[in-house]
Image (cartoon, rainbow, N blue to C red; front, side, top):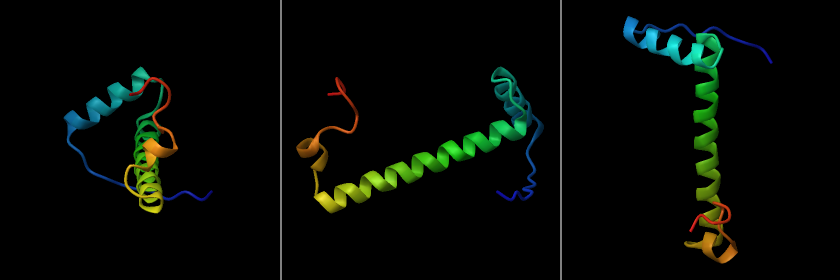
Length: 74
């Protein structure tokens, strides 16, 4: 996969917070930010697929076909 450069400006306080979060996970700030963006992108795509499934099967389709949340979630 090819990579590109994304440059952004942020205030010192935000950068310090990002450094702190990344350090707690043993990551660089760059890796932490990329993983956060990837996770957010996954969450959006997952929600879109659930919404599409509900549109296909109709409202309340989760209850008829089983909960997507897993056992004990009710």
